[in-house]
Amino acid sequence: MAGIVNVGGVLAVQRLTTNVTGHFAFFVDEMFKLHFWQGFIYFLYIFFFFLGSFVSGMLTEFVARKNERLIYVLPVIIECTILLLVGLLPARVIKSNPDTIAFSLLFAMGLQNSLVTTISNAVVRTTHLTGLFTDLGIELSQLFFYKSMQKRIKLFSSIRLRLTIISFFFMGGIASGILYSQINLRVLVIASCLLATGLIYDSIKFKLIVLKRRLRAPGS
Image (cartoon, rainbow, N blue to C red; front, side, top):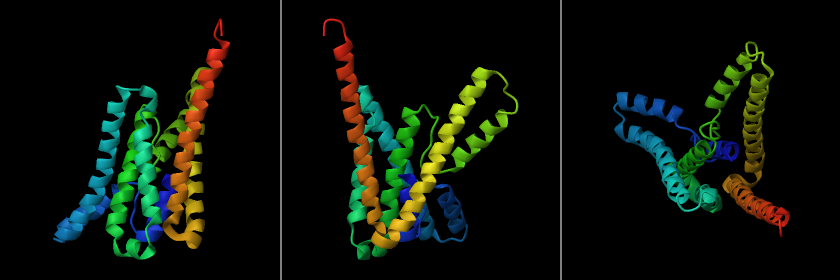
């Protein structure tokens, strides 16, 4: 998702839409230049990413008290809806409202990043690569020092996870770049459909697991 949104956002509105590090630097630069309105726009980029993270956290905590298995469903549905609506907007609307599009995509990525961080116990970040490459570098260096088999197995597992996420980020970005040349920002519709497919797959998989347990239970 993040790879698709990152490249699609840059190509469509020339804005970073999956992280806010660069926006913070531009915000400070514009404020020092006394360009307060442009500085405020960069502040809003940061704020909408934060707002998405906040909303995701609130929904996660609320749903966890009702049904812990469904903690990710509402944030994913909201993200799906945002990507779908933005992807279906006419090209002229996107070009005339680049900041609004960026706000929407940053909010969606804030939702995603917060959700994945929560359900992975802060092990995984998915919307940007800075932390992933940092963790990957640390873990690769640790291979030279940790000799016990148990620790090395754990390290290799974590390294595979980082490499998998990085690879899919790149594949999403490449796919987005190729598809954008054909269908413009409607590439986000594909991203939305992939998210929806993931929800459906998870629901079916869970029901099958429950069914198998019931069939294996004594007296079934």
